[in-house]
Length: 410
Image (tube, rainbow, N blue to C red; front, side, top):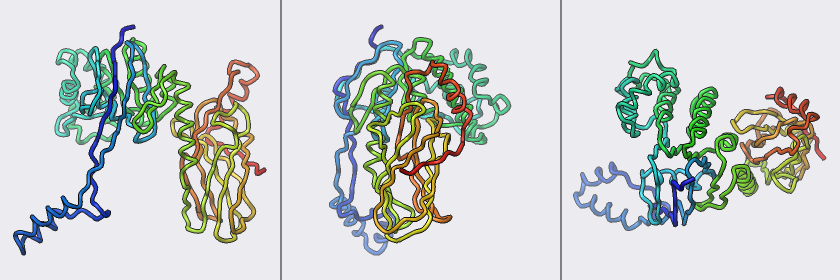
């Protein structure tokens, strides 16, 4: 395989503007009103704002380096603010790097924001040609693929209606359909599977799989680890603008989930009421991987400023596409004032292998006193997925979407 992308020493700096002392910005309206009473006041206001303003350098990317071979399918993952979108925009030539070198061989198509380039006053038909041209397709290519684009988007009935009258779902479907029918050597995709309904997301995923199977190079950013595992063979894990891991997709996803777990443990979990706090919710296991059909053990530490009665613990378990698979719950008869620690055991979750997020809600009587989404990321693993003895458990796990199961307190 030949090398199609090479990046060396890539860094990107942005300037962040601040007002000293945390003061609010004066508005133009304020300056204009002042100038009516004294002509020179606007000039003094402008000078004062400039004196108070400070500029901070923010490095979104720092000394990034990697190479990608022709036909590779590479996932780029990391928490929000890690630098993923900045990297894709530089590779797509939307913004310039501060320093570093990039070499790209082949035609590049970027799908960074579905529907970018649509004109609201144009019809769906006109926007297919307009948007296709903006994405680098010739008129002959668009004409040749026109029927396939329309069929994929499922907007035949509204093809000659201005897109300003489209629903958000129709708008997204048409935008993806145009971009997905490009035939570049390198396709750069950013979070397109986060939009649209579930059926459309599956359709997008299938199209991206087809593109990958055709031997084209794909760079794919997503927070959906299931999609990353399904679409890519290699992962670049970014953190604070640097690549901290470059390897196969499975190890990359494990690194991402482990980093998420560590970050969640560092969060000061605040409650809905001032007198109740959750200090931490962490795994009692040594790492975020849990054996298939093994109990989940969590350690919960909380504090209350007063004695309270019966308190309910609710732990939703959510899969990689955001669906709640299991809701585990238990009741604490009473909580006395002070700090308490509980070991929670979920023995009968029956989850199939995969990646999941754990949330936490606590109720006192009917009042929600604490709620936090996605506190912990976990991965259920097994080395015996082909073992026929496990098949009954796998089947029951698939059938138990939205089920309830008890929590044991040890």
